[in-house]
Amino acid sequence: MTPENDKSSMPPEITKPVPRGFAWQKFGFFLALLALLLSGGQWLETRQKLNDAQQEMARRLAEADVGQKEDRGAQKELREQIEDLQAKLGAVEGKLNEFEGQSATLETLYQDIARGREQATLLEVEQAITLAGQQLQLAGNVPIAILALQTADARLARLDRPQYLPLRKAVAKDLERLAALPFADIPGISLRLEQVITAVDKLPLAAYGRPLEKAEKAPAGELVSWWQRSAGQLWQEIKGLVRIQRFDQAEAALLAPGQDFFLRENLKLRLLNARLALLARDQATYRNEIKVAQEWLARYFLNDDKAVQSALATLKPMASAPLSLALPDLNDSQSALRALRNGKEKR
Image 1 (cartoon, helix red, strand yellow):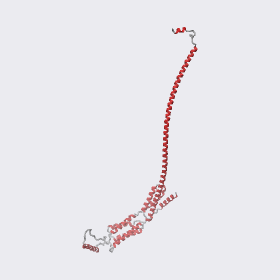
Image 2: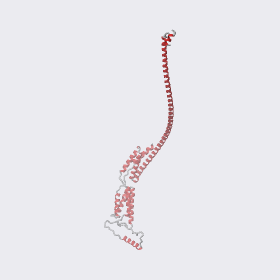
Image 3: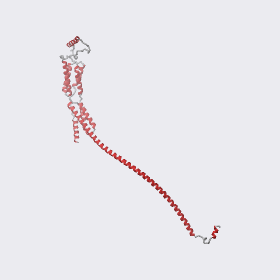
Image 4: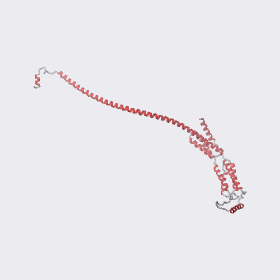
């Protein structure tokens, strides 16, 4: 049987038409079911997204936890480094304080040494100025006084302090005045006098023409018989009795036998007195002794001899050498030194 046949055979109440409101209800049901399906799909999608978000959040929280742990480890390590640095800084500060204390001690020690060195230098300067004044006043030794003042100025220049400038100016002024004095070569004159004194014993006398000859001695190791020795002594006596000498020029001063020794010794005494007067700056005595020595050399000694001529030529410029000079004092340097010392005592 076909469906159409079945419908025609059904009872009439079953085959009556369906109301239109039921169709709308069915359509609404389908719509509701569709909306429910869509809502379910959205809910599933939203839940999936929430699950993904939770997983992502959990992952990120896990990463954050790991990061926090790493940060805590880094912070701990940083704190340890900071504590280590603070400990090292404390040690450095301790050493710095110790170094500052040592520096202060060294600075104090250096200042003490500098003050001691300065005091020692000032003492040397004072001694040099005092020595220069003594050399001028007592011995009239200008070169030594100049050397002493130059030494004092060199010591002051080494200090290089402005408070010592007045003293340096005073020393420079005294040096200028001493350098302007005429030069008297006292040591050189004394040395030349000594040379003349040494040569006096070898100068030939005018009365003899030459120094007395001594008897010749027999060579060492040579045997001389008694008659040869006696003959030689006799010949020396005969030669002493007779002497041939020219007197066609100026008449020479005759000396008794043996007087030549006293003449030479007296001449040396005259020259020694002249030397002592030279060192004492006694110009009158010095010139008088030099004049007498020149007269004796010209009168009693052989003027043609080169040694006598050299002695006379040596003594001639000595007679006119200036000895007594108007020596300046060192009042400027001494006054500046006293003012500097008084200023330091007031401090």
